[in-house]
Amino acid sequence: MIGTILSSRYEIKEELGGGGMAVVYKGEDLLLGRTVAVKVLREQFARDKTFVERFRREAQAGARLSHPHIVSIFDVGMDQGYHFLVMEFVEGRTLKEYLEEKNGILEEEEAVRIGIQLCEALEHAHENGLIHRDIKPHNILITNGGKIKVADFGIARACSAETVTFAGTMVGSVHYVSPEQAKGYPTDSRTDIYSASVVLYELVTGTLPFTADSMISVALKHINEIPKPLREINPSVSPELENIILKGLRKNPEDRFASAREMGERLKSIGSSPEERVHKRENALTIRKLRPRGVAVLLALLFVLVLGGYYGVLGFLKVDETVVPDVSNISYEEAVEILNEAGLRAEVASEVHHSDVPEGHVISHNPKKGERVKKSRVIKMVVSLGPEMAEVPSVVGMDLREARVHLNNAGFNVSSQISFVFDAEVPENTVVKQIPAAGTRVEKQETEVLLIVSKGPEPIYVEMPELIGLEFAEAEKKLRDLHLKLGTVSEKENREYFSGQVINQSIDPGTSILQGSSVDLMVSSGPGPSPQYARITVPVPKGDKKREHRIRIEVTDAKGTHEEYNEVHKSGDVVKVRVPFYKSGVVKIYNDGNLIHEQGVP
Image (tube, rainbow, N blue to C red; front, side, top):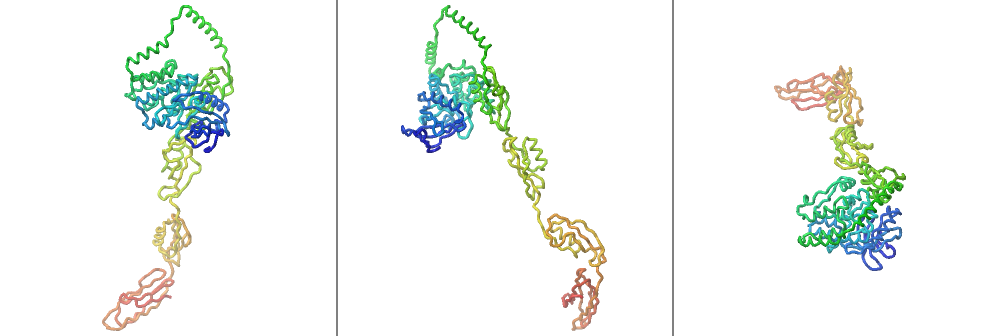
């Protein structure tokens, strides 16, 4: 959109912001060489012929206004598929932004000054037959010089049912709506007086007169509840200002100020002397004073009333019919306006949560669209509270089955795509993580919770050792060191291996095996192999015949290492010994502890 030239005249320079209905750009009027604001309708509204026609009609009416406290509308048109409005460009910010800069509250003197300017703007518009219907801080601009300018005069009727976005926050008109607007009744200039009073209430108290969890609840409070006195919230508010604002907030339009001019005059009187206030009231009374009527006038009036009552009864008995329009899937405020234009009234039958219909929008209504009904018939609407939101409960540390039950009981669905991961610390089949995390606020019915579940420790494979021939105790230790389990142990007679030696294992040596696996062993119960004999001759070293030498013979074979000879001999002796061995082995001969000979057998 940047760089686009509309109607060969208005060049789009930069985006200033957006609302639910339109996007506002800073532009340049190439013909007059001045900076302007260009409001371009969003595509979904540009396709609605009824809305576009109403937008153009009201905008053209607003263009007739010329007042220092009203943003001027210079032009309205359509080019290249864009429906646009050209307005005065105001250097400044919205009253909402200004209020936030002031920490949400203004001094009374400043609030009164803003209120007086607002009333002057409303007075001018009302005198020209225009009602704003959407007065709120977001539609009031404050120039860098401190003056206010009311925006969207003339198009407010076209967009009053919409919710507008400011700086990423959804701000609905419902907080500033009058009781008659909330009911769907016809409105007049006193509707703007009510909304202006809400604005003043907010400026000096820092809060709105009515708040609630849903827009419909706020609207119902406007209809049924009395606002809290301002001085209970901010004791520094003067009684005079409190009385003015509370009068503007009365439920019955007849009980409010008769005009914006009257409200503005009352605001101007704050802080003046008692004599000045009495003088102003006397002048006002003089203006409104009526001359006494004669008896003839009273009789004529009585006749008119009787005649009017007669025709009124006839009119009641003959009520025009109309077709119920479809107001489902649109905002409550827009539905009320559409029904009102059709001569029907609106009523909220109930509010329910709905996943697909946004908060504050109509889900259904009765009578339904297309039905013919009498005008003034009440159309009962079911309004959406939006999707039901809730905090996701924590299921980390729970067994998978327990976690499913817990989430289902809380109204959440569990994703069928469960992820399983290895975890050395968390037991198998236990939830280690959840998405969304516990405490996250999400839409209940539309949110699936993904569970990540432990598969226990990651498997480790080891190589199966050779256990055959080992003593049972040694074989058991080797299995334990490799984190393998000893399975079934059996015994069998065997002549090749000695009693207690492993003669068979269930898993072959060298096989890759998962830690924790069981290994069965078969152990020999004897008798084992028969011994063989070797003849060993050991000459004792010669020397001092009185000296003695200890000769020891040790055999290492299939039975292990065992000593077969250990005796003392004199020098020069020759030792001849027959030593047993099993299968094959090594014979070692020691003289006084020193190895002097080693040989294999057989």
